[in-house]
Amino acid sequence: MTSFYSFKIPSNDDVTPSPNIIYILADDLGYGDVNFGIQGLSEFSNPYIKTPNLAQLAHQSVVFTQQYASSPVCSPSRAGLLTGKIPNRVNIDLFISDKKDNDRIFLSGKEITIAELLKEKNYSTAIFGKWHLNGADWNDPNAWTGRTGSFPKQQGFDYGMVTKENPHLTTALEKNSQKNPGDFFDLDGHPLGVIEGYSSKIITDNALRWLSKTTDKSNPFFLFLSYDAVHEFISNPDEYNNMYSTGDPDKDQYYANVTYLDHQIGRLMEALDSMGLRENTIIFFSSDNGPEVWRTNPASGRSFGTSYPLRGQKRQLYEGGIKVPGLISWKGKIAHRICDIPNVNYDVLPTICDIADINLNSKVKTDGVSMYHYLVNNKPIERENPLYWQFEKRRQNWELKGEGYNQRYIGNIPIKEGIPPQVVIRQDNFVLYGYSDKLYLKPNSYKLYDIETDPLMTNDLSKNNPSLFEELVSKLEEMYEDVNIDRVESAKEMKMRFN
Image (cartoon, rainbow, N blue to C red):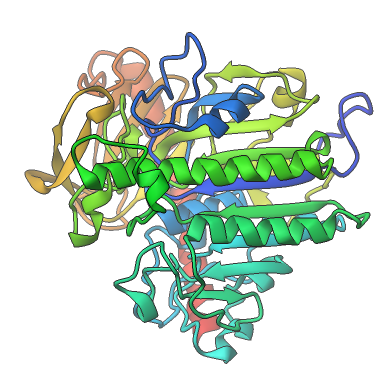
């Protein structure tokens, strides 16, 4: 079912040679955690959280109301983004533990990333922030040039500073917060020690410093800003905490964390304008998955994110676990509008390839489709296969509390009935959920929903529309088989590299 991506040459009238590309990725930012301030748009209108810079960017962007991550957790979502593949194909289907240091799961060196493809077109490539695509011992210098090929420099990034997971969750600073993080490394594996300040500003400061050094070069750049906000543990300067007075200091801190991230994005936009880079730079913004569930563990007491008006949050394949805010801005090239067409982050790689005039050869597979001609010419996005997700971890379910943008799941109020391993596809407005009794077995029960008329997915249509139900079951099972053939091969290749 994986298609080989076929490059179509854009016309000379609608392409700027070698545009710069920036991808801004938030961490655990929920569908309901932003306020874009767009009149008439019910989504992205949280009245309690201030995001003025994202609002300004949204008014210059295509705003996606149906933007999906490729997984409800971080590592596989990032793998899907960078490779253009359903992440299960590369055998990354759960967040990679940063404490075991055994590196048995990683983004293999055989995979081709956006950064590697852009380097072939003479792009300068940089990453600042969270990597979370291997479980190696980062304090071992030999790991950075090891056989796994799973470090940023081995995956196409030449510049930057990165953390294994979050700068405050790794072994050295397990009880630290976003304040004064101590687990950043340069791309050659040298630890940078404790850096004073807050992680969102530290990431932005260093990215802007790098940008200032690239403006006098003839090569375009690809900048991946992989923030750790608004992931636990949360911490902010007092001036941001003092912006909020909800009556709950922890909630104030969460809201402030979103606003502090928004401020850093505003600094980036100002810098691009002052450097004269804005008109030839395309900017993507999204989140890696839905919001963390409040109080699932001692560290998540400040995780007040919301997926309102959706069902589910992080670690779940319900809409709230995978549907996220999404923006694409290209000043003077892309008209501001609202897009209700479903898309997923593994569409980013083929889209960037069209933007950068990259011809993917027959050895590079992708599950994504290019959105380029939709972005610049408003042409339809053509997709042969349904969107696909697979999450094999059996998950707890939680009680839902609150209303509107105060709606969130409560991690210390579990529901007895959990969620078994799931496979989900979406075709048009219909989503089919497949459930398995055991890990890595084809689903043996299904439910069908129309998420346009039933966004909370309470009405199973499998018996009401049997012909559509049978069609989608057949497609899901065909895709499941295809994806998991690749998963098994990737697992073998990982084991061979590790050994």
